[in-house]
Length: 450
Image (cartoon, rainbow, N blue to C red; front, side, top):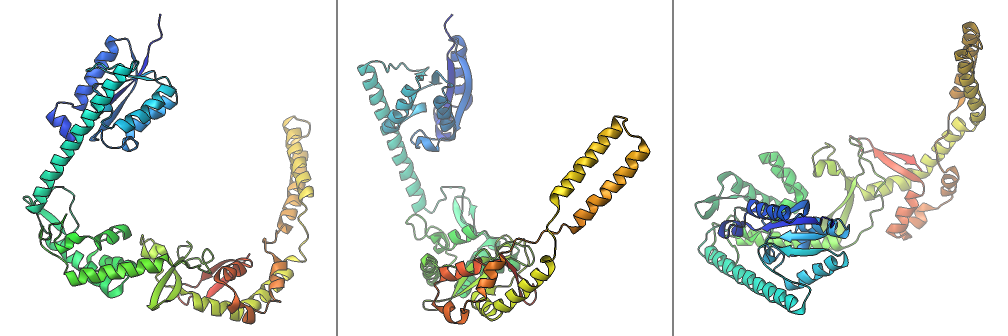
């Protein structure tokens, strides 16, 4: 008996084709299943791309990509689909995939059409049919674009997805009474504070509405709020004046230019939020032309609202504190460290391990009835007492580079610090500091050495 072929049944339909031509998913699935059963073909799986046009590049067809994974894994012998235009309407993509199929010796077959890839004339016929299908798709796309363009010029909505602040009334876009006010407040507050985070916080406090940072960014650049849409300047009612909108765009451009200026934040990764414990994030605010204040704050407060710590730690103040106090802090720490750990004997790990082995051996002797209960109890108490004594004395010093801290005391920071680059300053502090925490009320720093 010949080996039964392993088949993938590929089904694709766009919503328009499902309505116009009867290429529903169920109809395709039924026809392909019936064909496989009649021809003694084993169905490995169904691969269904719904609402996807064949002109869309194949790497955006989720099920098609899953099918190709099975091809490359050599799990298939043949691919079945009802018509060639279910597979591709793009000649170039077709041949890219055909090369993969030939490499893995996988054939394809249309059950409603007759194609032959083994001859030159058969391949020419496929080329012609794909070109015709591609041309038909292009013409259909042009007709749809023309229809949509006419609707836009008439001020009619062409999609159910609408900008925040509007709603659909019939075929027209009109301001949503509640949300439109929020949109206006967003633009005016951003114009006033020039900060997206401050605007998000303001809207949350005033309206109880949580805006995501990305959604706010898109909102601030949408020309629909000027009443414009796809070239129609009178598409809908205007929510934001031209002057306010253009002023906001200038602020956004200015912030983008500022953001592109690379800044090394000296204390990145060292500062911890006193409330939630996460790393404080670096940020900068413009004070004048080319002058910025660098600081650190908890994004748990400003992004996802999971933390209530709303204070910022300024980099200049932190510099001043460390340059003034770091040497005395190091001296105090080293002195305490030596007093606490210098006289501590090294843990007698070998002796402790030996006692634990003796304890296990004692249990075995008792279980094997080689010693009685009284002997076991006496020896057990003696061994556990000695183990506990060793454990009590075992206090391992924290891993701190004491030699590095001592050498740091010899540096003349007041002279060299201002001459260091920001990267050199960052390296300097990271060589001795593990992390810095703060008092939530006073912002007093607490240094933990590395």
